[in-house]
Length: 135
Image (tube, rainbow, N blue to C red; front, side, top):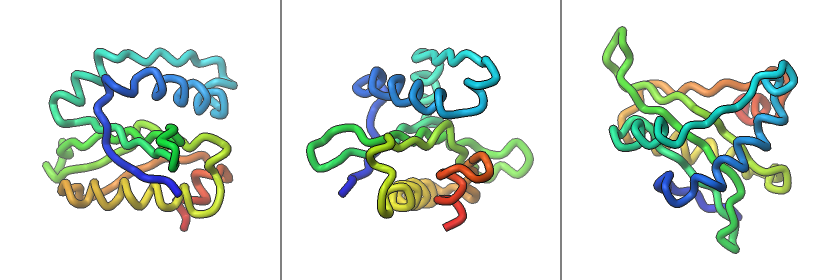
């Protein structure tokens, strides 16, 4: 069973980067030769402004099972709050049962609680992420 919480970036940055690298390796961006270049300072600035939050999935031993970074910003067109994902990633060993769906739902509920009028996530067609989103 996984638990989900928003955690400060400062305490989880190295684990986030490791997961982000694993996620990147699974994507077409990596296959196209794009190089991932995460900058802690930029993420920290957004977090400090209240525009970015890092959801962390942990297992019963408190090991990190995955991350979901979310931006929460007012729309430039309507001024309604929009939540959009930076990444939603579960380590392969945790991609079982309803873990992905439960993680997404926890993020969705918290973004709604914070006033998001819309939640946007992207996923390549046919990927495990797109199957989760379709549920």
